[in-house]
Length: 447
Image (cartoon, rainbow, N blue to C red):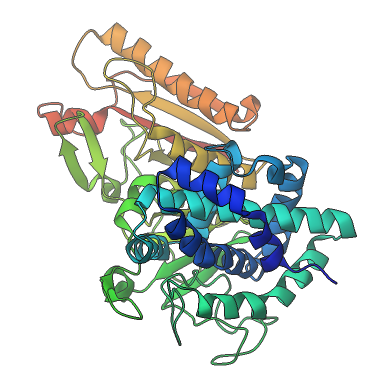
């Protein structure tokens, strides 16, 4: 009999594995079993839905091939493997703002801890990718053929969700519904509005730019809404996403963001006015930027970034993707964009742990524009000796450059320079002003 995705994935969770998971998670075995009855079809449904998005078939085929090459099914249940963490992040990206509500409902109905739910969601995602990878390899499937096979699994998966003990699915809407992966009305989708095969379209707009897309939710999505089936939760919980920011991007069309405001000539890396909105954090000494309305950037390679409309990522992508915006080769004070989530340890050139996410996002964008060359600028406040400040800014700019290089960007495409406290963007008379002046910026020198 022809192998099907859901039964094959469920079969991986043997009685022995259930016992192991219950012990490792320190949760009741019955609760783990009940959660998996919902989690496995949810992972199947979400990954199948990814196929319908731009570059979705290719992206999922590539992930499946990598899963097969890594033999993930041989050790997918091991605690905190690289694939486990990767799968958790993947499912969070695909579910978008619906992930917190989905995980919360699972935790509430099964009485599992939140960490246990996250672990099971990631584990199920790894299992689905492993099954798909094995099947694609065994049958010599290319991206389109694998996508076709996955689409055939959807009716069974959908029925399993409706019958799941935690009742994640409900008629008309569901708390786990992925973000729309294609613009409403796009050709090639199975079914039509209100017909089987096409999920409901969430309010918002997609804009195609530079080979990718950007999704901007309507203002209504920022407000809490009741979950189908009872209980209140926020369908789009963007606050955490602004802090985590996670990888793709394309924004700009007829509703473009205004290009970054040109800085004065005496300040090569002055921040756009909108980017200085935020607050000073006394505990860390950093300035916490308000990056604006949450949007979703989908890069040409299919990766996704959840960022703010005024974020470094969106400004950088906007500049690279729009042919109307060109590098000013005469006035080199123009075009600087401040990193809004890259920080260093006090008085050092060591990046803080949370800084790497934005650097990964920027690296992902730069990979989409392989001909581009950028420059990293480092700046300090005016306290302390000027020479030491210059040296510190130089080291910080170099550290950011090397971080991008470690993420796959050719060193020949990245320049760096430290400017010390010379080019301040606001007076150094207050802690807030000094925090704003301590910054790392990026400028495109070639598109």
